[in-house]
Length: 126
Image (cartoon, rainbow, N blue to C red; front, top):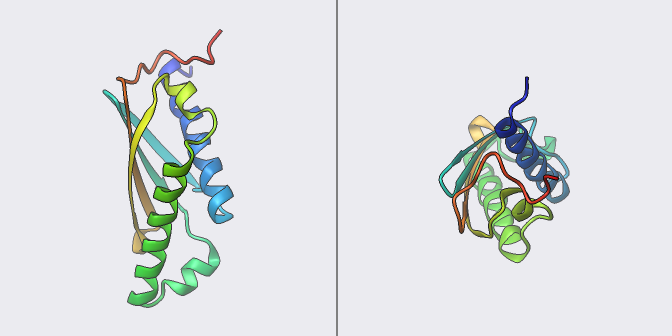
């Protein structure tokens, strides 16, 4: 049985996946999100495109891929909070911190919201 908390986490993951797919042409294969107070922590696995994998075969290339992914996501979210995210969470997003570990093909994003996240409530609920 899927709990309300799990449904909210899954809906949040779908928003994150959609943004990454639109930005990079490929969304993460797997996302795990946890809500803690006013913070959503998302760990993303299987993100790299074939081109990024090729570029990251050298240390310099890996750093270029890491910096590009990190900066693009932070810039994107600072310009526009993804549609539906604040409505789902029931709070304004204040900050996003993100980083990427190219060797592990794993990223982490930490979203900080204005109010504590109620895992059982969404403005989209009836």
